[in-house]
Length: 303
Image (cartoon, rainbow, N blue to C red; front, side, top):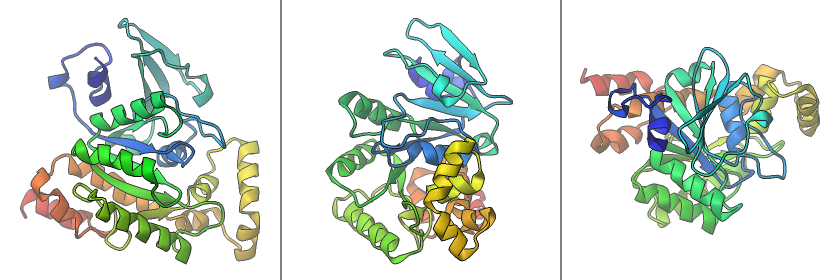
């Protein structure tokens, strides 16, 4: 039942083999690296609980398209608990063997479903949940804030051993721009480690120029304006000097964050990749640029 819920919109026991199929993107990474923030930016709202210094996501949650916000808690005994219009902190802690599906009215989810998983490195239970999420996914986004360490490499080996396609994004902190020298150095070091550890077999770069994609999620969430007022003000204060010095508007801040181009490439890649034969996936990915979609469609359709 768990895999059926994760892969298909079959919350009442329908036959998984005949249910509609969308690509499934899993978000992974060490705790407090920005997975839930990345998810909220993608969906354009406060749907997953974000944290600052504490472990937040404690379960696998599937986010899928719906006309209104609703959460369904699937319990081990087969019963379903429904929550209408829940805020992130109102979703109950899961029982062992249960899972959560959250319906969200977001255009991104018309092309794919998304799994948000616990951050690895916090506890053995969280590690197990995070690794389980990977087994369901068509593609994995691994979020980092610095160069890869032993725990990161171990998790990426799991992804590779499960033969899952994945990519890595760098969440730049505070006033660090995605295109500055420090970010580029970290991205280059991460890609070098992926290569030397032989983890590049199923690696999908989102851009030919940015094989590890840098983005400033703090800038993105401040520009998108989905945070509660007090939280928005607190986070804006972190970058206040930067914004005032350069006279930056919310739109220009969003562009500078790198998030707009990342979202565009990612949604197209995930939506299309499920229909591409695996043998040709990596050869197609090697030529990816941020305007690659039309050429990729021609390749798929044999034009």
